[in-house]
Image 1: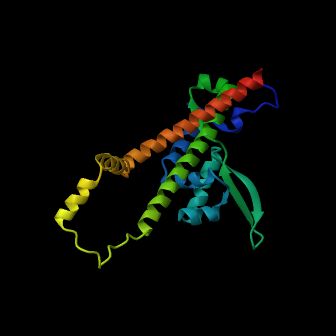
Image 2: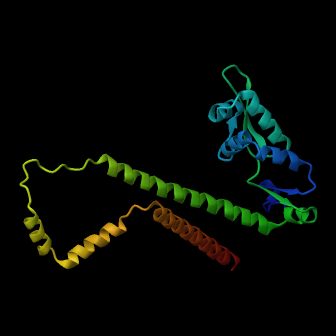
Image 3: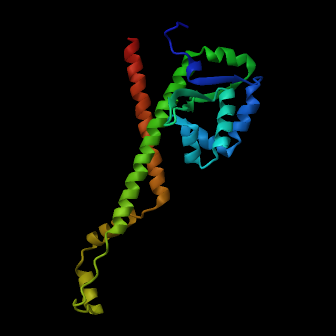
Amino acid sequence: MDSDEPNISDKVDIISTEDDRLKVIGEILSSDSSRKILQLLFNQSFTANQLAQKTELSLPLVIHHLKKMQSVGVVKITNVGKNSKSHDMKFYIVDKVALVILPNAMSQPAKKSKSLFNSFNRIHRLATLGGVSVAAWFTSQFMQKTSTVSSPSQPAPSSAPFMSRSADSEMTARVPAGNMESSGADSAVMTGDVAVDVFLSVIVVLAIVVIGLGIEVALKSRKNR
């Protein structure tokens, strides 16, 4: 592999089943506190003090978890700044996009696999796109429901004349059957069923992912010409 080509080890940590780090990684993943810290460090870098404030954990406990994560290469120090007292502030961030555990015979060839590197790049991009799409859909649904609740229903005028049953029946008879059917269909469509709405959102996200894959394949084939 040429030196200018991307190396999978820069983004993915491929670990052999015989690696001694597996025990420590298992302890990290089984800890609720460690997972809270990792979830924050996947998106941006934080100091230990910032992590303690966001996770509501004690500072010594956060430092303990960070040291354990550093020892197995899960997180790294991305920057060192100064606070108001001129003390060093270490900023931490997740070192790898993914951890892959493979048998010893497969781990070394996998580290040199360019196709595996490209696959993880695609998964990372499409997962980000899908997450943004789902977030946008839920935001729009929340705003729509909020606007519906906030708009008060108009009360009927107190001076409105009382409508007798005979008058009501007369108006019902005047309404064409086609209009009544369309009104019933409209009310059936606007059911507000959460399960149906979530199913439709999943379909939209999958469509976006498929379109993204199609565009990527088209660009790749054009590049190879």
